[in-house]
Length: 568
Image (cartoon, rainbow, N blue to C red; front, side, top):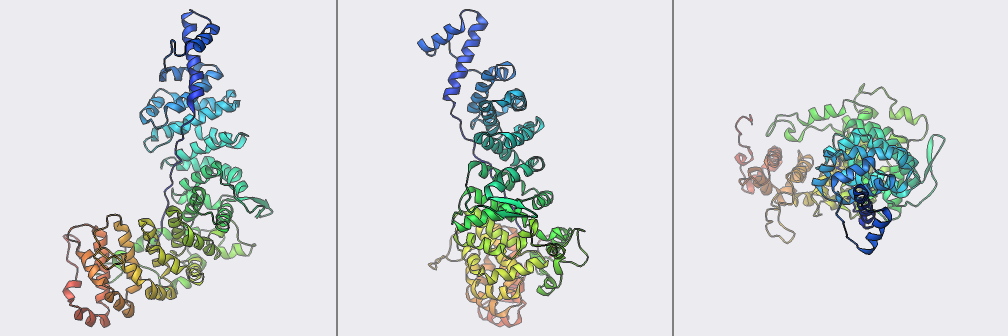
């Protein structure tokens, strides 16, 4: 019932190597001639003008590495530019540069006195950006970190007056941050600089006393801003350490909310920077109860794996949910005594208006997210907004109880139901799980049962098309999405005769029978298990049994077969 995001790296952009290539070729030709002592520099330059291509050969990788090591600043500048050109989308050459020791040489050029040259900084960072781009470049990324590349990129972001240098520095950070093993390094090295130097200024926020105040209403969607939000989005998915660091980062939550609010106010929802911000927000509200209940995730995992399996007396493969009464009575920390030792939400409220991480679960975050659910056309952003609501509604503590009710008051349920009809697998999966979490509120469950049952049934495996024709096997719908839909149906239908009768009338039982048996193995074991669990729950509704028999079903058909070693 909780989800995470995966960040994408920025595309490596080819530089414009023509002028740099010509300059490097000239330097290379000059060095050849000087070594042979057959002519002077003036004669070489004249020869290039009069006989283009005479004595010309492209510099090879060993030449470039040597130029980076021993050449003049101009030669090093041109060598870095040519390396940037050679490594554009050339995976083999990227590995060769690392093997030749080129990466530490490039990083060193940023850390020496020569790095005062803006052109050299641009060319070196451009080469590092291309060398770090791609999932197959893990070794290159590690080599950059080992050589101090992150620290140099951060320093240039802090000190360089050149916008291109800052954009390239954050592009290198973004590419490195995609590596699962380096996210923590990027987080620890770059987070505060990214927030203070990029996010807060772009969001138009200034600190006044203990709070941040908005001083502008327009967001400028620069490449620098896109890159910085991409880095933060990427590191936000690397576990509880990242969530703690990001939630407590001074000004980050305020920046994210302000940026998203401006995007909503200006109906500018589909850009990459907005996508990055909403995805980060979704990750920060993952398992939000853990801020006051450190054992929440462990207890949640134990509860999800509890039960007796298919056909058991508990919730089986769906896990167990706390009742509405238990959630309402648990207070701010979810479980009595299960606190982290930090001030609780109630204690922090006594100290003034909410700020920092507390802004993540205020009720006004619901009207911030719902316009994105309603109007956004970018499926990544749309899924992230629904995922944020899913996460906020997932927990047992009082903020989740309040948010579940507030989504209903803000008319968010119909918007999530509409997402079930989209041809976007991840969006449908997230919307279904969000509805399941929201259905922990009894009034929400009643509304979902009355108005969303047809939409949910229509997303089951083998459901007929809107024209009534049998649906062919849809390989674009994942087994995880089918399982999410069935889990939501279980929450709504269990022990409810009226909703279950309507489900039978919609043909849902027949669809479940097909997916439970799944003779062709098209949907996977998880979908089969979930289908059996819901079928068993339906048969246990005594008032429904006569209608099931009248429709031609028998009790034996609702009894799952035993699997070898399963104990079911």
